[in-house]
Length: 389
Image 1 (cartoon, rainbow, N blue to C red):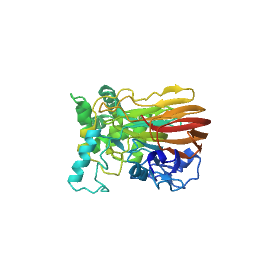
Image 2 (spheres, helix red, strand yellow):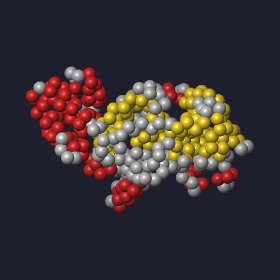
Image 3 (cartoon, rainbow, N blue to C red):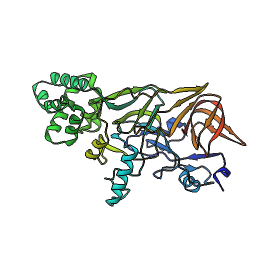
Image 4 (tube, rainbow, N blue to C red):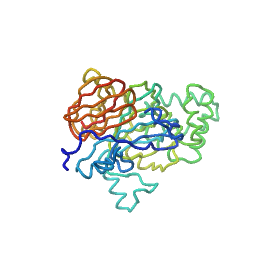
């Protein structure tokens, strides 16, 4: 069977991943399906070996990873439903060149792929975007201007008294230098008694000022973690439903709570910097980070037609085009898909009609579109289509 002989539409499914930061029955709540009774953090829809989507009928291939092997094609994205009850780790992702070099280096050093201290699980980049599914989705995204950070440190030092000011002084001094973002960040992640004292002083002072509620919240989740102070260096973003963020390589970020649809490169390469019990490699993280104040990282969708909007970043951090886009469809429409795609309904019900094939996509179900096609969509609600661009 050739790729053109494959059915156009293949229903797919997967099991939600039960990471501790997930909301109880979180994915089920988004999809309107039966819950597991435990944390449900992410649903992966794609061919990534870590959790490839299964075909609902077990044919014409058991999983989308098997489709890749049979067809010789590569799905250039991984679609996720993400539901967070608490903060994810502070993290960043590499460029394509950094990912390829890091993967080759760790292979050459004989680090097992499943080793807890491995940074690079594959040779691919992981640019990503996320669209909020509900109001109040919170994230940390990119560095703030140094002047804003220093102003907050001074406010906390002033409210906490002389002891607080003394404890925060080493951090403030580094922030005020010529490379304040880099040196202030590095000092925190280097750790040690002075950092512990600064974090403790920061948390104590923040408890007396409602403007710094996030510091108090992070301290309750990860007591003593330097990431609590790092969070003060980052932009705190709150999204309404339908609003989106674009997170290219080198951007430091952390999702804090809420539900969203996430589209990314087909990779699991994560360099962590705190707010996590997992491996933190500060040297490698600092090597991939972009130490400049972030611009507005909101990704504004483009209206392609009535009932169809496109979330597509302009370029990857490497300068290359991003090879995927996310379409949001809320009514009857016709969409042209440039390659293999995945459609997921989170609200309402839809039908997809292509040449000599059709598929129902009620809420909570997903369909794999095996090749480029023009698809007539009928229905109402919210249909997400991840596709090649």
